[in-house]
View 1: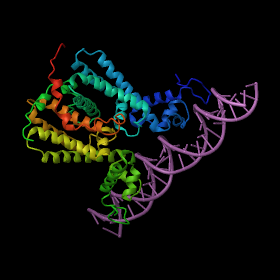
View 2: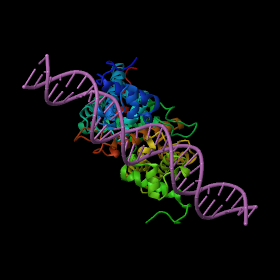
View 3: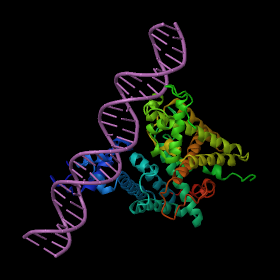
View 4: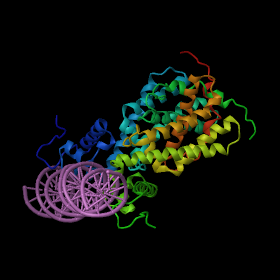
Length: 205
Length: 205
DNA sequence: CAAATAAACTTGACAGTGTCAAGATGGTGT
DNA sequence: ACACCATCTTGACACTGTCAAGTTTATTTG
């Protein structure tokens, strides 16, 4: 069951993967606060200073975790898109549902991705992964935009909507016994009442 | 310049306020990571263990900070609402602008309010403050809803939209040289293109 | 094949963190 | 004058990330 492959050796072999695995286990079981370099090292069966050699420090591990997070987010969106009806509305909604599924399933990772300022967001691998996420969303928005400017505005609107919904669904910030977000489906939020606002006459400026 | 009022005394007098003041200064200048009990104590001119006596521990201070954050958020929304044109659309938009202004002006506080799981969100004062925030938003949505169900959906839609926009505007998660969110005004996101989505024919289910 | 070099990891130390127990101090009420 | 008690201090503890120096193993080089 041990992650270590070569025993009695100063060379672990797959230490980088083992440490990431340990880090994921820690944050899944105890949240972001349960993550520490030394616990990762202990779980991987190495000395307390070993992780720094591969990741440069705590920030390096967090950067790697965030990158994995975006890759999983992309997989989740792509998976829901795969099973969606072939109309543009259902497909964009499916992408959003994939986003929400990821946020619910990987709470600590989601918090780390969109919250912490410690990871290095200029890291190439991270930029590629997060860029892919943006592209998936952009592609889903494409059928609804009639020009590039509107496309960008639309992307940001949809991204803001689904991200805000996901973020507000976390934690226990609502009043006791009154959790409106938990009891509201995103499909409703996504459609329905919006025309009531948008269709208003401009009135006076 | 010292916050302390009574010198050479074991009784500080306004230690609670002094510690909060120190904590706000720390997170404003150095972000959430710069906050520590001991630095707060040092700034307030007391021993390292003094804060725990008033707040029970670090979580207590964070809870107090989050409460202050919601109070400031409420003030910001109310202020923008005050100066808005007296039509419902402009007023709801103004509330959102107040939300965004707060998020930009109090970055660390915003992060703490909607991110951390350490503060105690069941604290009565905190619940009152966050409840008020929800009510302000609800009141702004009221003119646009034709029944209670739609009102709740609408509230959550608007809250998700503005919160997501605020949260994504933080940090540097976009690609280098490509920060779509920074260059997109919320007013555009708020209105405009949405009918393109909503007005779509249902197609096949 | 042997020696030099580089990489992987260990060991030990350091300053910083939150928390707790025990003690000192000073105001308050009896 | 006395007791009480909240307030704050002091000292200790385990834990954290980081760094420098040493040890071991693999790889490359002559």
